Image 1 (cartoon, one colour):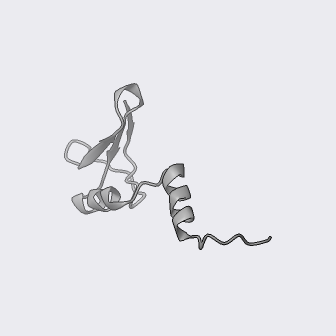
Image 2 (image 1 turned 45 degrees about the vertical axis):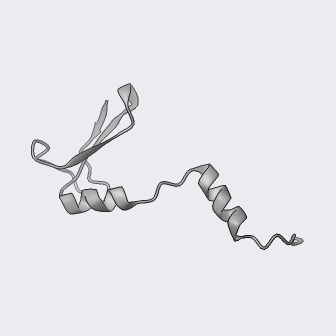
Length: 71
Protein backbone atom coordinates (compact mmCIF):
# COMPACT_ATOMS: atom_id res chain seq x y z
CA UNK A 1 0.00 0.00 0.00
CA UNK A 2 1.17 3.48 -0.86
CA UNK A 3 0.52 6.33 1.60
CA UNK A 4 0.21 10.06 0.99
CA UNK A 5 0.09 12.60 3.79
CA UNK A 6 -0.59 15.56 1.49
CA UNK A 7 -4.25 16.51 1.76
CA UNK A 8 -5.42 16.61 -1.90
CA UNK A 9 -7.99 19.32 -1.11
CA UNK A 10 -5.83 21.79 0.81
CA UNK A 11 -2.42 20.78 -0.50
CA UNK A 12 -1.08 20.85 3.06
CA UNK A 13 0.94 18.08 4.70
CA UNK A 14 -1.00 16.19 7.38
CA UNK A 15 1.26 15.90 10.41
CA UNK A 16 -0.98 14.02 12.88
CA UNK A 17 -1.78 10.88 10.87
CA UNK A 18 -2.69 8.98 14.03
CA UNK A 19 -5.87 11.08 14.33
CA UNK A 20 -6.41 12.26 10.76
CA UNK A 21 -9.31 11.07 8.61
CA UNK A 22 -8.36 9.00 5.58
CA UNK A 23 -9.67 6.95 2.66
CA UNK A 24 -8.17 3.96 0.93
CA UNK A 25 -8.45 3.93 -2.86
CA UNK A 26 -7.93 0.59 -4.60
CA UNK A 27 -6.73 -2.65 -3.07
CA UNK A 28 -3.66 -4.77 -2.58
CA UNK A 29 -0.17 -3.49 -3.27
CA UNK A 30 -1.55 -0.76 -5.55
CA UNK A 31 -3.90 0.66 -2.89
CA UNK A 32 -3.43 4.29 -1.89
CA UNK A 33 -4.14 5.57 1.63
CA UNK A 34 -4.91 9.29 1.51
CA UNK A 35 -4.87 11.39 4.68
CA UNK A 36 -6.90 14.60 5.14
CA UNK A 37 -6.59 17.59 7.47
CA UNK A 38 -10.30 17.47 8.30
CA UNK A 39 -13.50 15.49 7.83
CA UNK A 40 -14.72 18.39 5.66
CA UNK A 41 -11.81 17.95 3.25
CA UNK A 42 -12.42 14.20 3.17
CA UNK A 43 -16.10 14.81 2.38
CA UNK A 44 -15.16 17.25 -0.39
CA UNK A 45 -12.80 14.66 -1.88
CA UNK A 46 -15.48 11.96 -1.80
CA UNK A 47 -17.92 14.27 -3.63
CA UNK A 48 -15.61 14.59 -6.65
CA UNK A 49 -17.13 12.74 -9.59
CA UNK A 50 -14.76 10.19 -11.08
CA UNK A 51 -14.44 10.50 -14.84
CA UNK A 52 -13.25 7.61 -16.97
CA UNK A 53 -12.60 7.79 -20.71
CA UNK A 54 -15.85 5.90 -21.23
CA UNK A 55 -17.95 8.38 -19.23
CA UNK A 56 -16.32 11.35 -20.95
CA UNK A 57 -17.09 9.88 -24.39
CA UNK A 58 -20.65 9.11 -23.31
CA UNK A 59 -21.11 12.71 -22.10
CA UNK A 60 -19.82 14.04 -25.42
CA UNK A 61 -22.02 11.65 -27.40
CA UNK A 62 -25.10 12.59 -25.38
CA UNK A 63 -24.43 16.30 -25.90
CA UNK A 64 -24.30 16.11 -29.71
CA UNK A 65 -27.20 17.00 -31.96
CA UNK A 66 -26.63 14.04 -34.25
CA UNK A 67 -25.75 16.33 -37.15
CA UNK A 68 -22.33 16.15 -38.71
CA UNK A 69 -20.35 19.35 -38.89
CA UNK A 70 -17.59 20.01 -41.38
CA UNK A 71 -14.32 21.14 -39.85
